[in-house]
Length: 224
Length: 398
Image (cartoon, each protein chain N blue to C red):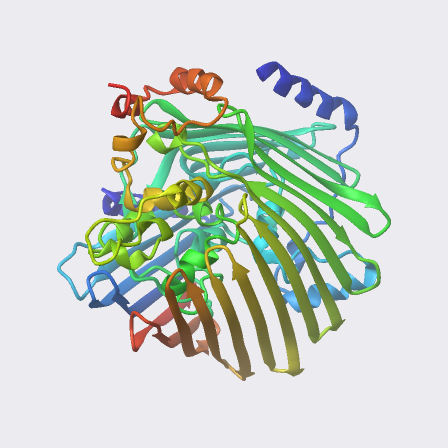
């Protein structure tokens, strides 16, 4: 694989010949965003800070030679991504721990987060680690109130309906399982060696690479 | 430890400023916040001090600078200790070797199209070398808890990128590795590209390939068109699957792909009015799907008045949301008064309710470099009849 990476790198060098001279935007840093349209839209060069920018800014920011720093300090990034607030944006709300939340966290976000988190499930993990979910979900006393389909109480008993539904839910959004079951202890009784195989199709190949990179102490959870 | 690091860092910045007779710019924000902790059901009150320092002109050519940003906060409503976060403190040396090298040393937010994070380490960007540029970063990864900083020992992140900006085409290839307690917990190859395809039509591509799982865990391909002046249309395909650190037991489980097909449009009616519209089809594999519709309006009906309104409707797997957001800002001399309402009618598995947020606030420039800001907010939901929160901030620049 490293050979492929090297080959592609070399191709990049061969194909390219001259670095493109991009317009410096440093002198425009004090302008209001709606003034950008004066140059951009009228010349059919769409401004990159468009109405969709909250979702798409990542593509520009992760460029190695991004020119974000011509107008923004790193505090501008970190105030959203890590809950800081030296520059107050009144549209942002405050979390239950006293951090500022990005504008995407609308209304009472706790109420709707389980739905909004499904609009691209990877979005949450750009800022939050799984520990963030565990902080709440492992502390909620009555987990039945989470209303996960496969966790419905069976009648008035203490047992739960545990059927094929849980496999579908887990495969679609396994990260949400981790929110309440960080060590997957609840999975082991059924999925341990000899039980229902939880591994992906090409597990043999993946397993070798995983073992090569980690101590994989968790294997012993199921394979005693 | 985090507090000590914060104080040592500030001292270092001050000493550097004095020794080199440099130019220093401070920005301070002293804040009083109130909010509710829905787990403990406590009403919390915090006092927070944010401080950002930029030191420049350390050398005659002004290529060397220092940048720092951190936060101290104390929960007044509990006996918890003072918490501290040092977001960054780095020394920047730009345009070395005739503008070819740029070095940042210290704590910084380091990024690539493979992996990103806050590191205690260094980054080097090489540009103007000819056809291609390079960027490298590496160091101990810094992780924050909700209020402070975690002592993330033995957690490291490094990345190497090659990029080319040829005419209007951009290409970037990155390889990044994250270590957790000396095990490799992520190994990602990132590739992104963008550029024109035809007149008024361009593309963008962003992929993250997991080297251990031999699969693309994120893929985005988009087309962006400006068919007529002031109209932008985007079509996107995105796919991803849940991805875990290799050190997590969850990494051994089979997972399904998420796919999204989106179409978005935005039209600037004139400088003061713009509309957006969007649709996304979300596919969670099997028969689980959802539709997401969005429409928005940005308006400046008066010179000093800005209004934003949007409506979103999502229906399908995991639940329904129909929501309106409305906010506005009016500027009068040294003051800007703002307010807004969020209203979300939602239905998730066996729970149906309305979540609302009402807020009002202002910013007031007392002097050119001193300002006051305040926000008052009420959240109404199934969890709280009234969840009041807000802040008052005194901002000083010098």
